[in-house]
Length: 76
Image 1 (cartoon, rainbow, N blue to C red):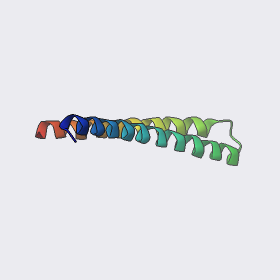
Image 2 (cartoon, helix red, strand yellow):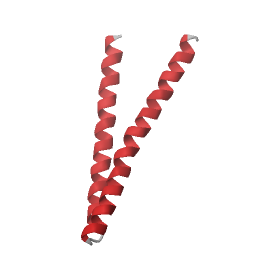
Image 3 (cartoon, rainbow, N blue to C red):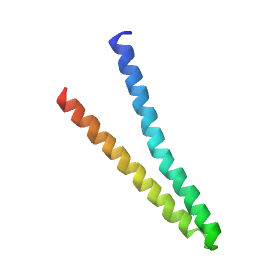
């Protein structure tokens, strides 16, 4: 396998990883928020709070990956 193919597969893995780490916390926030709203009978406040929390966690994970990748480029 050539260097070009390896780099393409590495980039594909990175894009997949980013997609997964961004969607999982948001879906978890939707699920938990909806469950708590049903449990306590609130009108969607928990759903909103946990969606916003999931979005914040997603961007924090994205920032961590960006920092890690930028440090790896400096080391090379």
